Image 1: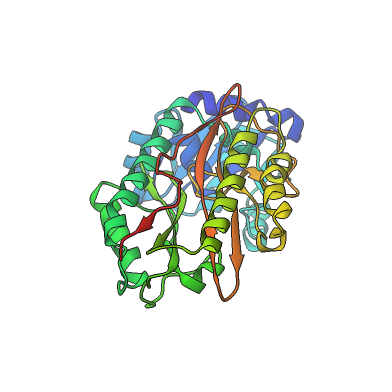
Image 2: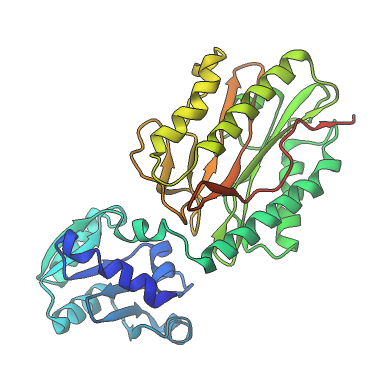
Length: 357
């Protein structure tokens, strides 16, 4: 798998106008090498693959990255300059989105090559998940599904948002997760009007929605799902708005297929909410890529995205309606683009769950 990823990356060198690429992003480094250490620099040329690490990681890198020549360094910029000089490369790409101004100055000082800013070279390769990656994402999604089933009986009036979030984290970690994909969102009542609300000491109350947005990391890969449930018996307005978001979410899922742009998929779901008069209450994009990172730029489902969907891409589909002072509703699945549409990875029920109080 690693060799295939490297070759896919090398195939992009001519269009980028480079004969080598220096990779410093931690997620990109792991993707290309399999190395899980916290520090290291990758150098890829048309016929060489190097992984530069310090003393702490020499043995680990040798075990985890057998396709790479492992180079130990004492000072990374000096070692990088020496290796680039020995390789005889002239136009060297760097990851513009991951290199600071200070680091760029050190790179120029260490290696008198022509440095070429590149954007998303590795990320665009990462956007198409291989079979191994999809299997790991599905494991992460399945664990999140089990967490949702686990927490439902514990959603009772009087339990705080913070307590719910902690119980969910404990469950996922005890089930083998490496950690959280992102800080868990538990938003009850009016707090649900904030799409990225953080759990507070507010107790859950009867007669309110509770939005749970969460995910875990399984062997490096992330899951991300959202469900909104109701404590007690909902009013007609609660049911009306929930059904609206559910229709938009299902419309968005149905719109995911190869050849569609992220903008077109976003528009399909957004139109459902706009036609009901709540367009202003849905202010974020419909979805984002998920993989080694929980928010990946490719693919992006939004009003401005020109990304063309292709088989193997994984994206969230997560419309919402947010009404300040009242609350909010969001429903989110992860889907993988297939040859003729998409496959929904999230299995938790989406119909409105009304929990006993």
